[in-house]
Image (cartoon, rainbow, N blue to C red):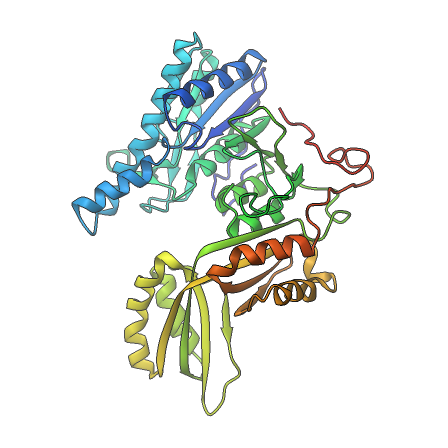
Length: 448
């Protein structure tokens, strides 16, 4: 059921229908033009012919969202957040109606719904809303009438008086969140996420030629990979799937091939400690020099950033000397300008010596359950980077990852070196694991 306090409702799933219910999500590249939309429609039709009821969530076509943002920027440097949400939501409306039309052309009954019509209500924050509730009565009714339901992803309606309800968007990757929220609330058999890659890999295959596709990955490991830069799944979507125990299947929309299952992994302790690598170039480092070393200063620095919705990732503070210390932290590169404007007056008030900013950095992470409790992994990571002549600027750890800040132009070198150091190209062979072939090769269990 939905867990209170998570991005979802606290109500239990509705009873499952007589036919198995599958939620599918197709990203922007999957519906990028008319030919691809027709291909998606044929795939949906095949799944329906196989005996499943279907709810399909779609993203905006191709680069539509970026094009709409550029159009808004051409009108004004500071678009109103409400009007921007109204504009961006039209991208998913377009995709949903076109997919519905393509299905109808194949003789498959279908109906398109906006996020609001699908019963998705949010907390009302424009541009980064979180789902507050899902009331899928309309979806259930359309399924009962024999239709495939196509839902515009990435959006909902604010949970207020209906006369004042506002369209809101869920942020980048929000269609993933839409799909998993619907799957959890509807009690779907599975949630399939179709992308332009086959599944989850040990590293970005565009950088590492022998990156290996994973058959199964646990929620916690996938959450860290997504948070540290892997772009196949949205962070909030993985979190929502985890707390609601929704099995997520990542598949290619361009070929019929086994994908990757994201679920609780009973063999996590028997697998390689390092399951994958992630990297993120959207990083900036801010260093505050000669910060007064006294209680309350850190709060005075970071509280205004939090109030502005700027997420601070890694923080390193040096040992204080002569009443002052240096402090470095990282944020998303796109937030650097706002952060500097916010910190300017604070620097003057508290008497820092200076603030420096570096946007030519990136982070690279190794991820795997139990890394923190297993000796030698940090040393091996640092050794591999040293051998590749990659300098480490900052280090951060958790129970399932070790992250280093490095120069942005060394990302590919670092990723290749780490992939080789941990032999991630080698297939895993787990005794008794249905996701591992005899002889060590992997395949996907339960893939459609």
